[in-house]
Image (cartoon, rainbow, N blue to C red; front, side):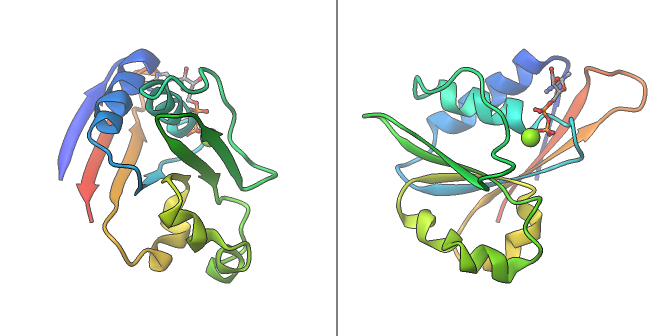
Length: 140
Ligand SMILES: Nc1ncnc2c1ncn2[C@@H]1O[C@H](COP(=O)(O)OP(=O)(O)O)[C@@H](O)[C@H]1O
Ligand SMILES: [Mg+2]
């Protein structure tokens, strides 16, 4: 377990970019943390490493969005609205794992579906400092 403290959106995006640099063509990142923690901003930073989308929103209604170019294929999930893990299986969620890098907001909801290695990142807000975040990074 590693802990990283950031004091701005930019810093969080930078951490995400560093993590993205170490990834292969596939791999799973689970992002957890309350609304407004920075899961989507983290994803933006991650995408920027591959020259992909600068500004995105959570794929709330579609569950998953694809970002793709010659460098990488990235599936950005937001599984908050899934009722349970069976719904994840029903949308063929697991099939994406072999197709590209999967970055999953509220991923703790579908953690049981993850049989392979993944990186879990929990982003914690601070009560006093509105721009401070603690990132707990764990290899699972
Ligand atoms: N250190 C920080 N890291 C990430 N986001 C931050 C930070 N400080 C402030 N913010 C702000 O918090 C919000 C995070 O939003 P977002 O990434 O959409 O959250 P989530 O996807 O977890 O709901 C953004 O408005 C961002 O500018
Ligand atoms: Mg989000």
